[in-house]
Image (cartoon, helix red, strand yellow):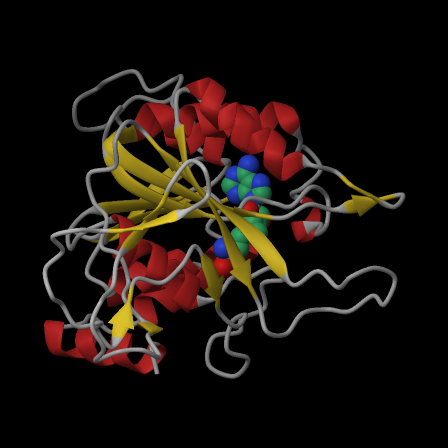
Length: 302
Ligand SMILES: C[S@@+](CC[C@H](N)C(=O)[O-])C[C@H]1O[C@@H](n2cnc3c(N)ncnc32)[C@H](O)[C@@H]1O
């Protein structure tokens, strides 16, 4: 909605300023916007966001109180283009998504989005999998237990804090390295230093993570992702005090993880009800000191 307005302080003509889309500053580290992300992202300067962790609507799988009516290729294409503009050089977008199955066929929208991101200039750094131990069952086909987590990079990634929580059964033994040759044979590496296998190694790009914890995390939002998923992406692709965006904020899960990990957060949500859930949830998350942070990470990695 556009209204004729003059600023009372500087007398600037604000006629073309939208009065329905605005950012609300929660504190120095958090700005939340109620409105369409395509409008609000225009307020975010070029090359300013270190990391986006987001999950857009999956085709038309949920109705989101009617907010899905305009959803489609024309929207997600513009959103991804905007994400490229506002992401810093070396920054990352973690795009968590799945497809609807219509008349027996998956839509393939996830892949179309990944290919479009590459057309916009992103590198497809990784196609990761979020595998969930529990999932809804149809018994009509192999049960769908995973979602895609595309990692788009603007140029070469500047921050990678790889999470090392994969238990090595052979820990304590000597490393014997070998490389696979083009003809398929293996060649023992010469001159390698004698090193012991550590207890934990770098995890793979398939993350086994439960959906959100039912009692402590679950809100009224119909498609919430887990705090742990948001947390692990934030740890992997950003550092403390970096700026993180979620243009499809929903119940504010990325915002909660940002507060826990001492990152700045910009969240945008179209639906007023979900926006209010997110705002309350983020405000009620206590600020953390570094000691708490260690406890949170240790708790999740148990
Ligand atoms: C998959 S959900 C995100 C859930 C979120 N990750 C969480 O943990 O709660 C997608 C959200 O995008 C919102 N949405 C859809 N279109 C939008 C748009 N154009 N601008 C902003 N939000 C939008 C929906 O209302 C919905 O809450």
